[in-house]
Length: 165
Image (cartoon, rainbow, N blue to C red):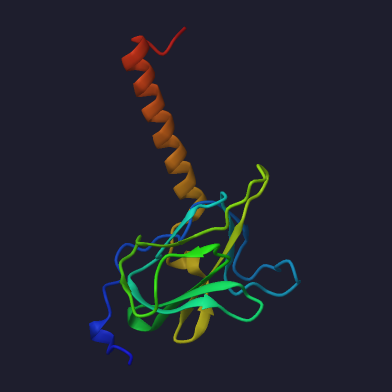
């Protein structure tokens, strides 16, 4: 039974489902030559996939030849479709908030493996460019690496008393 729109959770802070590099943008040709109705984000093996907005899980399973898919219903006529997952850490009917973990990308033993997540945002059933609503995942990755660099510099300062050698 579907919840009335007023019972859906708040969308919350909108974010990319995974940090990484966008390798196919909305509207660009994908690997089969079709216009992409979403974005393809290359990330690290086993990366945690997060809910891009608050909502209700409507589907979380394999679907035809598309692999594992999660569909999230959001307020105001939005739906998210996320595929390319290795594991699903959610279930149908679960209420989620923006940023909640919902799965992981596939894990590979190859050091050169970079799984790709597909993310599609729909408004009233039609695909729209998700980066008109979401921050770019590359900027999230850059912020993470800058924070890591700052923490490492601070640790060096504490341990060695100086950043110079």
